[in-house]
Image 1 (cartoon, one colour):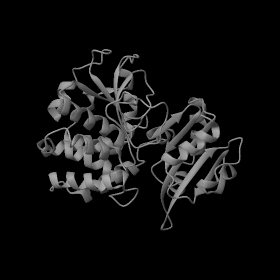
Image 2 (cartoon, rainbow, N blue to C red; image 1 turned 90 degrees about the vertical axis):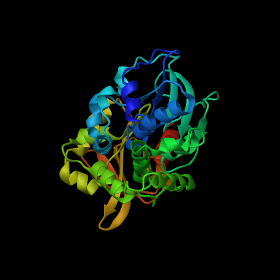
Image 3 (cartoon, rainbow, N blue to C red; image 1 turned 180 degrees about the vertical axis):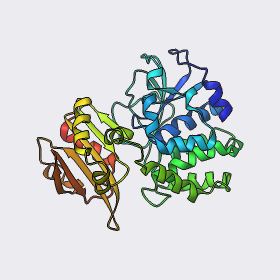
Image 4 (cartoon, one colour; image 1 turned 60 degrees about the vertical axis):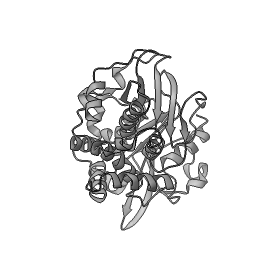
Length: 335
């Protein structure tokens, strides 16, 4: 796999005749970025077509992904040779393979989709494959699909196995939360291919790196795992607001700055974690022109405090992550 990545470093997208660009969503989390790398490699193995992974974030923002940096360093991947958002001039005929999202936010011709989110726009009817199924991790769907199209010996590559297994474990909290049968089956398949990898240690280290706030500003944390739909922006933060407000008392000011920089009508930050031994979901929002609790009864928000123009809530509906909260806000805001 490392040889493949070294070879693709010399390949640049060039319209319809260029390589297939495998691109994740704009949050740039481990699942999205690793899905782009693994999806590109396996597509090339399966169909003998030139593919390139592309990270759908600015190159300068990659340093914010501590968990992915650690993972890449551990397997010897050099991101200097990988394409980032600003490296490609997308045109309407740029061939795209969307992973971890199902509606393109860049120009291009969608040829394949593997995703686990709600439908975000018009379906790409001509995409092959077009897979949009429920799973804890998009990576599970990618491996499940390509297992049927590549020789099983492909999965003897420990670099491939580690890049595939890490996001599955991270997104499902080591197969304890939001786990679907496909996640369990694929995690077992990968673990059997590399039994010396140590899935427990892999998950623990990945989680520690993801939750690290060391060396970041409050504004950088808001950019670390961020998605935007029109004038709605939602950041996913690594630790609870109790910890964040202690370490970053300027978080409310940073949220208001981010709202202005991104020209948002609604700026939201979400997080989860243990507070006094109890696992909670939490949401913060720059004070909006609507009642948050009354507008989203199914999400069960409970007002906690207002700090410098930002409202903080606990969320009693613990099953609703950003995958569920974002569609609710988009429907309410008609975005």
